[in-house]
Image 1: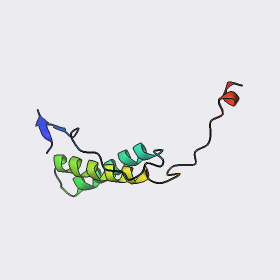
Image 2: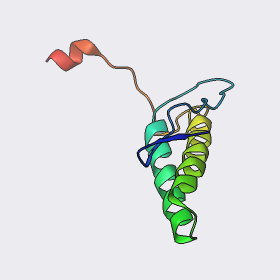
Image 3: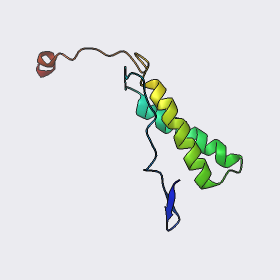
Length: 88
């Protein structure tokens, strides 16, 4: 369970969501923060306590971001970087 320190909630001790195979991490961070904010805002509008809203929203956000990491081309299409062309 999360613990409190002077009314601050700590969620750093949460376990990572298991991923079968990481394919593409592009967009995972954006997916995590967006899912968290939408979930948190919705929970608070429904009258759920701040602490419970944080814990449930970060759990759902982590699950969604993990799914994004398993999709090829989750955000755009990767291309090879040609370092020699960048120098010109």
